[in-house]
Image (cartoon, rainbow, N blue to C red; front, side, top):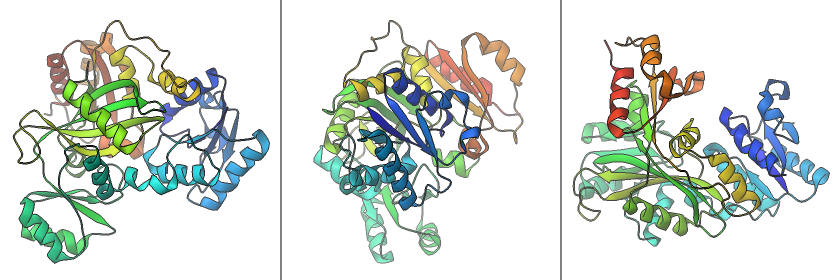
Length: 395
């Protein structure tokens, strides 16, 4: 089997996907914009060959890289990045090279467009916030008259929480409309906690692995207000969320994928959407959860999600056994610009026995994830909340 992995060097932990594929007997062929000599040895050892491409934004050059691999190794069976930024490129390459194991170019808009996602949610019977594609100011005002303030404005085809705004009155609406760049959607504001249904899906859109992660109220606030990030992987998945996650996967026909589907857990009733405690869809992300979350799933569920994914690719089923014990796994980040009550040494002394990761974060991830991260495995949600307080309490 020939598997082209797009940008295998970022995030850095993605070498694990390549490694498990190689262990399963796959030719793993990398295309990336990092020079080969700068790759980590664990990644180099996981690749059959690496094609250095300084400008991956140039599709003609990407096409030639895939054509080179096809000429040298024969038919390409998979093309995948597991990366939000490259999903459209992945789909275009699959279509052009007749690789049928993933989403094609004519369907990618449902994975990427905030507005078009709503079509698939509706087809699957999954409740979701009302959404308006921003056009004229008059139409935008009419939408807000329907749903009321506040509303959330976000790029129509954006990645993460960048350039996302909470708009609470006419003055803020006018300022947003006059200064926005690119296409935007405006969504009904939902009051609730954000959780995700994370799963590895087989060729028949059936889950081989399922997990839930609890996220902070607003990633946009983390970025825009310079807050500290904390989130955690839970022991299990509530049945209501499991059902909606599976409905979403089937509606989007998200086969052969690691998916990260975001939902609100309502903190109060919303007319037409549900009662307190119900789940309402936020958006789909057809790739693994960001940062070190896949590793946190491993720690929480006592298994190897990278291996489950690689087995899905190579044999189409799960070979990794169910775990004997499961935990919570929490991430708590701190920023160098702040002063905290407890020192780094005190954190290590208190939580060192349960700490799974303790690292400095890459500069490009600092705004969201902090400069210093601590990832800890714990038994109870109460312990999770206490760790977050201990790590992030400021002077």
